[in-house]
Image (cartoon, rainbow, N blue to C red):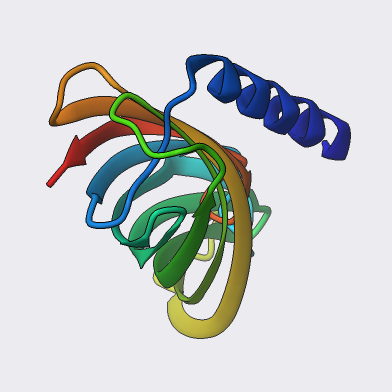
Amino acid sequence: MKKLFSILFVVAIFAGISFGQGYQKGVNNLNIGIGFGDVVGGYGTQSLPPISVGLQFGIEDKISVGGILGYSSSSEEWFYGKYKYTYIIIGARGEYHFLEPSNNFDVYGGVTLGYNIVSSSWEANHGYSGYSATASGSDLFYGFHAGARYAFSPKFGAFAEVGYGLGIINIGVNFKL
């Protein structure tokens, strides 16, 4: 996985340099995406892949800060019953943008520090019906990512990220605000 992450990161940087475009102060981005791969701390088989909404504010030509909100669910079945899990992630993100400011292409890397709100439920089966239980727990989580955004128009584009946090790969749409 580290090898794949490194290769994609280097390809994204070289592709971005060839376009000669980037990010600038005052640019605000809204990302709406879906992830592939488990959310941090996930159990069982995914029922709903990680979905997320993120907002980034350009505070310098190559630095942005913002937040992300994500949701995912999973389940696993044991002989005595079925467990269902939900994950709500609230996090702060910081990103460094590698290219000179421009309008169409942005290559970036960043970190996330957040809170993972986990809840679970269990329902019995196989002759043990009538038994059920719920539980919840939360913890701090961290993540990192490398990604790229491409603008199809002045206000609309797409993004792709690889990393650790809300899925291993995240793709989606981007709106410049």
